[in-house]
Length: 413
Image (tube, rainbow, N blue to C red; front, side, top):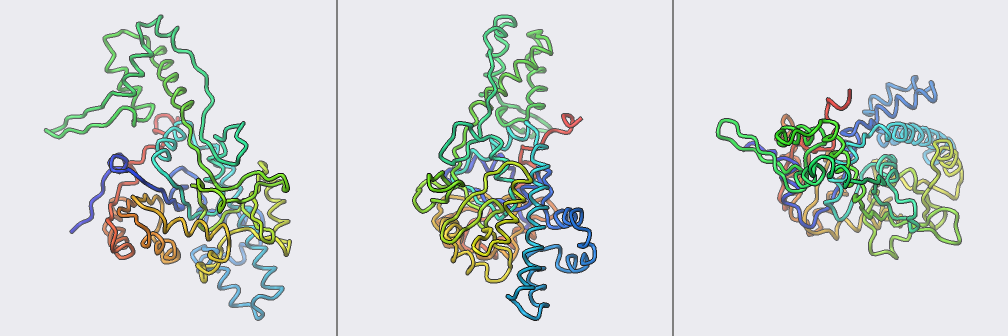
């Protein structure tokens, strides 16, 4: 029996208590290229010597975890000075390259996509990511409320608007367009088949086209329609508020925010394999908050070269579970997975063996339905793989191309 693909809109209709798990494919869908090969190419830009071992990277599929494992096996004194030096050098260059790629590309995520990302994120109770690059964190920090002091991340715009004058000038244009946005529905009828979509879920360009066609008899000026639609979008941005708590809070005894996840019942953002901006000093876990690339690189270098500090990242493919359970932050995130109930949506996850420890926790949980992003040519293979991993869960695949946070092509020009 062939696997079926539903739309992401249909996924949202079926969600009640729901959670989100992101893989690297989520970054790529937004044009943020933080895959291993892109990171390696950026590493070569920083240090041309990496060209000499590109064949080693290629044979390990540019996978840092596999590469570090092979290098450690090749060195005569595993765990010795040379091993630590080589490993630390590669890790540092990898983190610098990945951080630079994320920081330099995050601003390319258009406002249209930001609106869509809000629609994507607002449906979930908890957020998990397998990525340790800083893109997700940077994306959220772009919308952080300036007066937010407790360390929680809030997605919120700050665009003022006035609609009354426009209504008076153009026969209620703003109110009518806003009503269409909130309660309207797009219906397409082709060969006795009907397709319906709520206008509140449409992209800005699609909504603009529909409005101009629907209200043609009003004889509104195109520029006034555009102005009213912009006001509607501004209002939606203003109401885009998501309290996303990463468990880090300011502490009077430390300069950097401190992880207090165990003391907080409302943490809902988890980096399952750690992240470049999270580090540990003895028994305390901190978050790096500097904004500039240079400041981040300098701090990463200090931490890597400091015997008492460590970046909280799981780099090696073997003994992942043991490394996670030995770290306060990682263990908390790992434990949270097994406590979930309801449904979970996976976007951009390859379902590889490297992440079996994560899937084991989901299997232990009370999650009953797992929605997984796929595409037409891969759906049968993905479904088979998913059923094997999550044998006792209901598996539903959805078309990743229907997730509506992509900027329409005609607005790229």
